[in-house]
Image (spheres, one colour):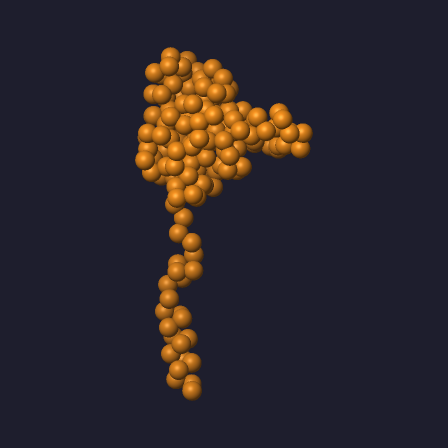
Length: 164
């Protein structure tokens, strides 16, 4: 009786600790730099200069690229858009529209760090949010959103977001 119990305990202890932990994908520096370059190129093709920021699943800044001539406030705006998209798991263009239409959603605008302005889009891999991209300085929320989604569409790893 003791031997089977000891064998079971030994088998359970032999299991690697990682077997119980979920395997999570995260945004790599290489992928972040590719997305940033694609966003800058997408906007440049339209004659627009932007700043783009990418954050990982923990909200940590992974990459920032700034085109020449972009106002300095856009760097922080792009980071906050990325953080907002990550935190809410929603495109910031949709959040801004919902906040304008829904009185209860307007309170989101008063939370520190959130920026309800189009240009932030979550990055998804197999349904999991692994990070987010934020674009600012492209001449309006719709333009910023379009540059962010264009960048995501260039990388087959990420699920294509809906274009609003």
